[in-house]
Image (cartoon, rainbow, N blue to C red):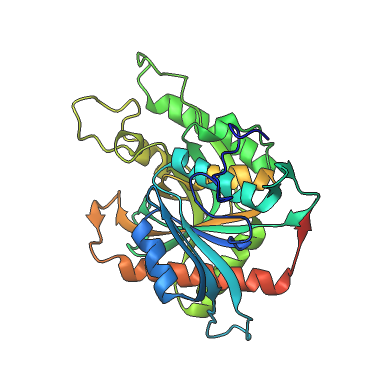
Length: 327
């Protein structure tokens, strides 16, 4: 791998994250806000090994020790928290560098014969799409609907037939929501990815153990915050008017699950990592509700609860699946 393909500085650190192999744990939390990464590192991790900031990307590696009310005693887990930024383009950079740190020998620039399986959970904020979902509820993603185009540059196979069916259904919904005279009619098409079921189960178990009421559902990941999520505040009109309503009304026929929330990262995360055989999932707190037009200005405690759920889920997974390697 050339230095143009994989930039490594003179100190052996990868270009954007500015950390070395070995400074990253196989259990990882991804957050959007650098301040949130710093907060998690200072309050929920101990025995800090690495604290690094570059280009607004904060990375902290330490040890988490979270147990729940009904959880058995779980050993401390070496954990990394890092910033993914806002949107899938930023997340694509960060996740690729995490994978490179795990898989590539930086001295020879070749892939290792085997390497640990990564477990990565996104902890974020999102907008709720169902009127019945209370603000502050963490949404645990089962499937993600990618309304970004980052995932389209990676030829990941369908994880299951549900993804293929949902893509077809949602493609029709998007086209029908657009004006037939739109310049982009028929050119915007979602891709669907599946969160790792073991991660989903661990998040549900951890939320119950910690007494944090969470909801399982589908997540829409968009390429922006305003028009891509149906916010019509500019003088250039959205290409897909009221896109949030179109998604909210769709029944995916998955045991009562609905499309619960909109955010900007989950789709690519689980699309890309799942194709590599890594385990990825997402838990995002609803800090506003698009159907009731409400916003929670004091959402930080709810996000902290979601973070504790994610850390406990990583601990549960690690205790049951120790030292698994991919070759």
